[in-house]
Every structure is written in C-alpha cells, then in structure tokens.
Image (cartoon, rainbow, N blue to C red; front, side, top):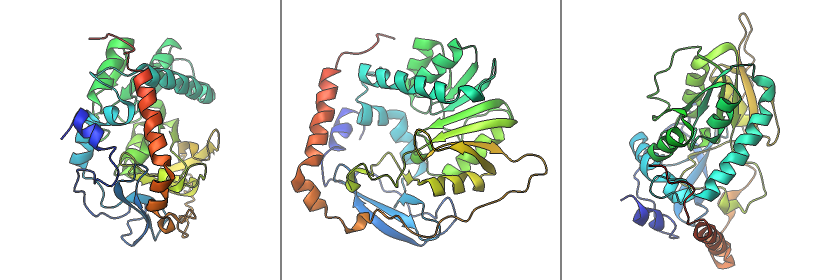
Length: 321
C-alpha cells in the first residue's frame, strides 16, 4: 500500500510498518550479536533498533530489504516525511532545503576550486546542485526519488541521475568533491556506499558526510528512531565506517560532531584504523517505557505540529509539469 493512505497509516501509533525485512549482519564489523536498545520509534510504532555488540553501530532489526527500501524511497518517502504531493516539493521543504544548501556551500567553500566536479548523493529537490551550478561548478546529483529528481531537472536544469547509488554508472575518479548530507543513515549498506564514493573520487578529492548524531541527547530518547533511518551513527562509528571503506578522517566536528570530511589514502600511506568502540550506546533506550511517552502527549504534539505546518504549507511552491 502506497500513497496518501499509506502515509496516513504510517503515523498511527502501535500499528506495525508494512514490511517484513530480514536479519542481517552488521555492515561495519560483520558481527551478528546485538543488543536491543529500543522497540518503538518516534511515532510509537513497533520498530526494533539494536546496537552491534562488536562495534556499537545501531541498526534496524529486522532490516528492510533492498526491494522494500527502494520502493519506499521511490514512491512514498517524500509524502510520508515531507508531505510532498503531486511530485512537487512543498514551500516549507524548499525553504529549508535552500537554507541548508546555502550553509553547506559555505561549509565546503575551502574544498571547491574553480569549476570543480561535484557529486551530491541524495540530491533531493536540487537546491544544492542549483547553488553549485550558479557558482560555476559542474554538479551531478543522484536521487532515487523520482518526483524530486524530476523537479530538480525541471526547476533548475540540474544534472540528476534518477537511481540508487548501487545502480549509478559513473567513471572512477571523476569527482573532486562528493557530498552525502543525511544520506548514510538511510542505507542498508553505508560502508559499501562509502567505498563506492571513494571509487568515484579523485585521488586528491574529499568526501563530505553528515549524519544525525545518535549520541545527542537533545531529543526524547523515543524520538531518535524512525523507519526511514535504518542506521544510527556516533562520531566513532562514522569514522570507523569511513576507515573500513578506505578513507581517512580529514576534518570535522562542525556544525555537528557527525559532520566530517574524509580523503583517500595517499600513495604509500599506511592506513591507521582505529578499532570501533566496544561499549554500546549510553542512551539506555531499552529501559524507557513507551507507555509513559504515550501518556505524556509529546508524540501527539509532534504530530499536531507537523500537521499544522503541512496545512500552512498546503499551497504548492511551483507549477512545474
């Protein structure tokens, strides 16, 4: 079931998501032993998150299959999380995306030479690609969501590959900078994705990665997890994932502890791989009661606020056809 009905049902507490998934090993260390840290997501829907006993990387278990994730991102994700209807991003999304793209461009300015070749993995509705192109860079996006990919091409003339990262056919060493902002947490195989990005990167290029910091405590613990995020990183596990993919930490920590710049190993450079942390998450999410969270009403206020923003933004930002 997809479309509006599926998006509405996905917000109903205690009703399971319509996926079967599969048990799989940790994509970072290959371990299978794991400890449950939470059995519900921020919508109070059953969704089990575990922490790998070997390295601490958290993941959804059972993990949605590649087919289930592909179908979800191609047809349902934007409606489910951003209330995008009829293939057109809402004004609220475009405003936020433009602001985030502007901030990202400023953050990466020191890594951009004149006419740089740039890849944006998960390019969404194309605002970052638009800013890059207007600054004289050669920008390409990969976006699996067909509606947002179509919008980026129509609204900005952006070069967007409508594909998963696995299916994208790009030459080796063809980009000076690759950006993956809030992408790795959505992927079943984030280490494999980083390895593919490294293949596409020039020898002296850089990879920018930003993911939510699972060690942050600014949210209620039960708000940490939801269906779209199948992995959850801390600074340590993000660095470990990049090192496993053959990358080296270059810079990071701003504006988030899990905002980082990586580079390739230089010729003759010996990799120094730090062992992933052995301690599990300090959040102790498994000890919390979803009943107390339900009675607090916070989940309802979150839903009401999202609905209010949607109603305020019900007018579409563009009439691109």
